[in-house]
Amino acid sequence: MRCQPGSILVTDGKSVKVQCTGSGEVLSYNWQGTIDQATCCHTAVVITETENADGVRQAFDDSTEFLGCPPLALLHDGKPIHDEKKLRDHLAKTTIMIPATPQRGQNKAGIEGEFGKFEQAVGTIYLDDSSRSNLLASAIREIVRAYTAGINHAGRAEFEGKSRIEVLRKACPDPEKDQKFIKELHEDHTKKNRVDILKTQPVSRILLDEAFKRFGLEALDLAGTLRNWLAARYTPEAIRQAVAIFATEWDKGRLKNKTSHRYLVKVIQNCQEELDLRQEEERLREFAELERKVWLMELEAEFKSLQEQCIGDQVENNLAFQISDKAVFGGLALQRSFWENKLKVLLTKQRHGFNAICRHVRRLFEASWENRFTLISKIVNWEYQLAS
Image 1: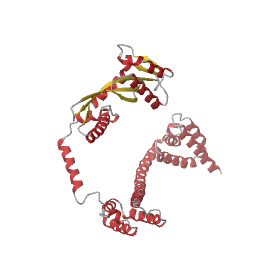
Image 2: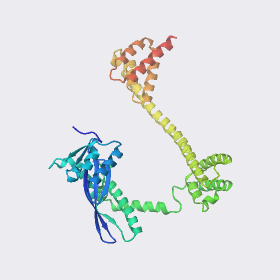
Image 3: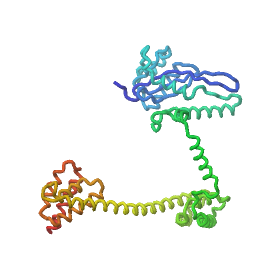
Image 4: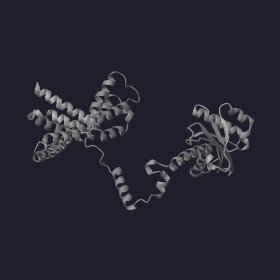
């Protein structure tokens, strides 16, 4: 039986070594770690000079605040500090204190594992106590180092459970291939006429210069760096539309501040995205129509072959039955539509076959209910239209 997350917390103390590089002094502090037994989520981090009952009580209170409620039990290693009356009285109202079973390390395997990960990833903390400023800077550095070490050593799903640092250190890149790539990358980023600069840059720059002048934005881009970047990246059409929108808002008095040029940049980006989407839609339609023609050619050839094969009134030889099969099982909307149209034309000529085809479609148990029901409805509707 497994406990639910938040039911049992595990607490233990671990010594953390601090090396003072300025004075050479080595300090030792106690890290009172507390984790959830079910998830190994750290619920509290308390640092004291030595492992003591006050540290355990503080870790318990921090964990309770973290969880939003006290745990049902607190598993500990049975040290004398856990028998202190003040600590037990503090926890007794809500939580049972359970000592770990001697010689059964799996009781506290979670917390011990977390301590082991810390030693592997972070290790000794190094602080420069030669001056106050150096001490503060080194403390921040070690905090960031501890964070990056933690995420570097964590297993990653995208690397099949391996850590980033494991993948990096075991990597054996192809020097020749990588040198070629880096050379091309350097050339692309350093040459004057870069491939990502639009040919319309001169026209776009003129539009931007006029807009910045008209709206008094030149002081916000004295070197023209922003305008150069915009002109190289966005088309005159997008810039023209954006300037028109900007001018409308400007006339309303909403943009007369030191950051109004940022609004212009955002509108240019939005206009360009809209224009690009329109072009992509047109090209998508173009290629979809081309694909449709190819599909129809294949389907017409299949229909012609089916006509030649279907001779007789038996189900396996009846053209209407065969077409209804394909209409039901058509995987693409175009396929279903093609065979439905062929079936409609055929039934128009063979009006006595409506009922037989409906019964046949109902017997296609392997077809999806949605396709079967839709086709039957269409057949009934075709018959009604012919009758009227």
